[in-house]
Length: 387
Image (cartoon, rainbow, N blue to C red; front, top):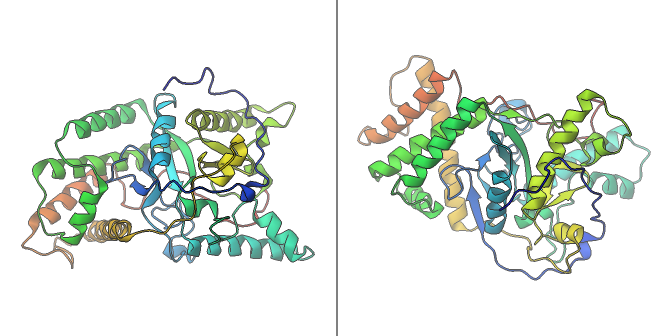
């Protein structure tokens, strides 16, 4: 796709009011996982609501764990394809980090209630209707209504940002991508779901190499990626998070010009791939097949209704969780000087232990941790104190 003439043109006004009245004609575009071990490995994911890494305020050790959150980022297949297009339009050395896409109603309820109660505490004079209206600027009300589904529950809404890599890290990632493309191994995510059912079946050599390459790629992105300055953290629940916040002033300070330009870069790349921005949040975009996206783009109907994960999705999620927990556990053992294979690792399958040992050595070589990242910490969704 040809990049737009200027990725730094001003962000236009977007109108999404009335989006719930857009009719839905479901097109059955299926949910697919993106990120490591999927058919979309070049999309870097960081599941904020699962608490995958230390930049998440929802980690269990912070006391804000969200039941029902997934470590896997799922999205409609066409949404994943559009993200690849948008990423290809970014300047060299810039790539997306995807925080969230498909979201369960359980998590949607938790986020909605948390923001509403924080707003009620800070503004006790507001009526329940006004509290709900203000809350819905930052988190949609959970809805199982098939004519008015919660946007993230459709798999058609995405929360993301852009990270910048050093020339050295970008060159290595490009090399990894070329090596992965040349490997004769199955990239369809169902392969990994089947492997989750039989984890002791040793994969072939190309699949082992692909695993180590994907682990290295993920390590470089989370340890070497620098989040662009957007003026607020991800999930900031105040007016500064508005997509056009830095477009309004007549004059900007040099400090404010950078987040304005970064928001423009992200918005224009995504818009060129067909996404519609969301006025209240710089990190949120909607596919044109979603109700909000259709409304913003002037389309007569939407094609994404609410979704539930199927058995294959849940198997893949189970595999990702086991892998994440195992890496954390083995890292702690290795760094504490315990050489023994941890519980759950059967001695008769030494290839599992060896693969994880090699992946952990990559982390140790960069002084990293399985849950570490250099990305700026996200905000917990709530009515904020001033920046």
